[in-house]
Length: 135
Image (cartoon, rainbow, N blue to C red; front, side, top):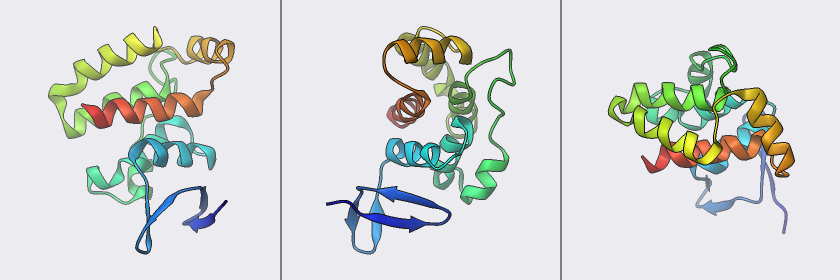
């Protein structure tokens, strides 16, 4: 069964329900944000807005710009900044795990590598959310 539910300005498909609320993990929410047209960084900040104590719109305004630091991936930059705000001691662990899983943190090389693997930026956004959540 396919369900289409408007949530704000985006639509989320095939999610499970808990009462009148959609039950989504951070990974699924980040992916849904990205599929809705948000860049990788904003997608992650909106997904973790509740942890930041902000609305999605407020969180989006403080997300780092993708490739703004020497061409680094927006997902990487967002993950690092989120953890700097939520759990500064975990930043080093995040950086280590991101590099172990992806081999690089540069946007252009990650895009090329993922295309060769049949993956895309949406996969990276979800995987980055999973790393953040697990730390």
